[in-house]
Length: 512
Image (tube, rainbow, N blue to C red):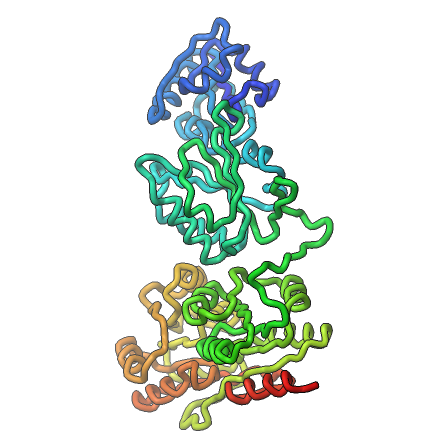
């Protein structure tokens, strides 16, 4: 006997939001299985069908019963609110079915909670977006947090499902605080409870204001991206027809010094300038740099998002008086882009070049990653890489690394994305140490001696980059240190001390 199993979406709560095809499927069914609230919504469609109402938490029983009845040759519908394939019953049906089942299965799409909420707010999902459920009944909370962080890092619009329950009070606030590390506190958000139902409520606010709200399981929250806009009480996210344009927010001061940094000396420079009553805006290339700058530069404005070249240009054009490039000595791509923007907009560019070590002792200087690994192979198998995770892929890609004959060790920042990248690139877990610097000579010695390191490869990062301590440790252990020289970029207006660059700013201010 060949039965039929319809997986039917009944929408957000009103029968008029159901598709015609979904209604027809219910009319053709002999049996409808679902949760009691859904039957209230579709009551006009219930005529002679057998109704089986199983409460929440009995989803497995619903799936098993539906499949058993379809196997008997009956026409069965399983119903879910919203879209049955989005946090609905469809996936559980497929998990429970057998490969040998012969009954027909058809899925009927519907208006999901995200769609319904978006329509009541305007058009907040008109560009890339993601849905994230905050229920940890079937998903580890750690996964939820990791996904929220990654969605925030790429500034995705997010529709939050299963926002809050009596047993999960604090989860939503933990997620909001995670998002605030990477998204602006002024990000526009929409809150809809009981979409298209009698108890419907709609509210709009900023991301930081969500911390003062309470919610329930019938609430969906949409969190915008940096472009999401409020107009005539509607929220919408532009698609780019008129080119993406960031509106300079109120907390970005006009005629400010734009400091591109991410290192400790960059933060020190920001504080010195702020103490001289200059308006300073800090932009960094990493999420770690954002967090670090926020903690250490309380009198500067720190951008919450990583900028594209177009965004960088627009921001600087609208609000920058001077550009200070205090990026890492090896970050030559961003330095060149900043010089290009300076030239295009006629805004003064000043380069702070971190001082380097003058006494390399017996260290070996090379020009490239390829030269470094070729030389390292001659000293032994155990090679310690002090080049950072960001450079690791480039290092491996541009070198002929014989992974069977070499044992690579790595030190990286203690962040999940750093560890994940290192592991994905083939570094063994036992060969990774995740620590935040600076690292002393003695700590370097203990680590390298314990790992029986034959050779260390690092970059000419400068005094603040811990190069002196690496040189001293290798000298004491009598192991070679290979130093990759800084890239040769023709900087304009280059200064080697914080005092010099502050003096240059003062002179520009004093000029007529």
